[in-house]
Amino acid sequence: MRQEIGQLEIATRGQGLVEITREVAGWIASTGIETGLVTLLCRHTSASLLVNENAAPAVQRDMLRWLDQLAPEGAHYEHDDEGPDDMPAHLKTALTGINLSIPVSNGCMMLGTWQGIYLAEHRTHPHQRRLALHVIGE
Amino acid sequence: MRQEIGQLEIATRGQGLVEITREVAGWIASTGIETGLVTLLCRHTSASLLVNENAAPAVQRDMLRWLDQLAPEGAHYEHDDEGPDDMPAHLKTALTGINLSIPVSNGCMMLGTWQGIYLAEHRTHPHQRRLALHVIGE
Amino acid sequence: MRQEIGQLEIATRGQGLVEITREVAGWIASTGIETGLVTLLCRHTSASLLVNENAAPAVQRDMLRWLDQLAPEGAHYEHDDEGPDDMPAHLKTALTGINLSIPVSNGCMMLGTWQGIYLAEHRTHPHQRRLALHVIGE
Image 1 (cartoon, rainbow over the protein chains, first blue to last red):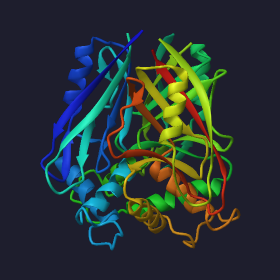
Image 2 (cartoon, each protein chain N blue to C red; image 1 turned 120 degrees about the vertical axis):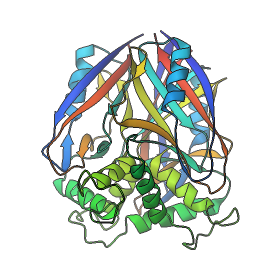
Image 3 (cartoon, rainbow over the protein chains, first blue to last red; image 1 turned 30 degrees about the vertical axis):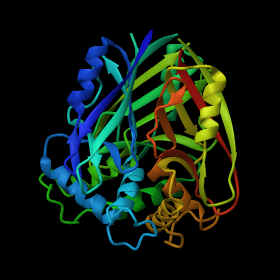
Image 4 (tube, rainbow over the protein chains, first blue to last red; image 1 turned 60 degrees about the vertical axis):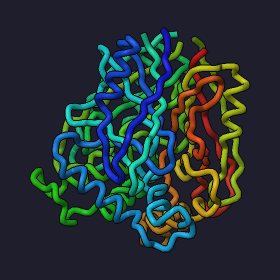
């Protein structure tokens, strides 16, 4: 049994979903671990991780609109000194979460056919986002 | 230290919560691991995992009604070619999440007294759902 | 490779967020594990775990108000025999989640600069809350 730690840097283009399934799979392959558990941590409070349908782009647009409705800009937040998109970004991050753990078998994450892993950028402007990665197994 | 990978198939009867605590506990027992960490992954984008009160059935009915309010059918989604319950199912899945990791001690998950693990089916019709399982420990 | 199991008891003062980053870090240090994965489980159905900004207190107040809006008291829940704050507490717990797994490197959790771990108490009255902890690594 052994483990590896890694980091992934993702450039976002402002509010939206960036699929990172391939990047995570590539990192697992680089460790040579065939059977185990991979864990991802998004190291931010205004970006999050989401497993979502990877086929229809309309699903992603509906998801973003729904998050905007649940945590709208302009809702009279007490914390607004970093801009009107900041507090909604914290709320969306709390709602969707910042970590995922996924079993690995035959060198592949055991995701379902339609599941993709997305980094969700909740700020209006582009950001450089960092994920911490951990895999344990053999 | 060793690990095991498994799968669990759960038949749902349409929208609702199916308690799976016993099935997961049975799988852990079958591996013989007494101390460790178990991870569950729901391999779908319209069903999710939830830890919820396992005593009062009214809690589960209130939970389902609340999810319906937060992600209602008929809310003019762009993605609606798989039926009116499809996009709400994706949203409820994002809200509640698709993975859980639970410490194991003395062969038992360290859940609280009132905590049960539920598979939440968000589609109207019955489905066969698959969970990936991983346990590591000794 | 080795593992440790632990528990953490947190006294809450009623509805609010209690930062527990230091307590979790202290427990990891006590195990002597330098590289690995730590997992936290909140063993309750009306309190949850949240990673949130640890700098501006206004963020935490906005977060609590937002949770109150999404899961309000007095919304005609079927389950109300444990008081008007009980069902909203279950809903907020489902929304924010009860477990976290965080990679550990050089003896420290790989959290981002602004990330703090919070126990979110969703009941009106003070409670004694218990977390189960697991760390694996070397």
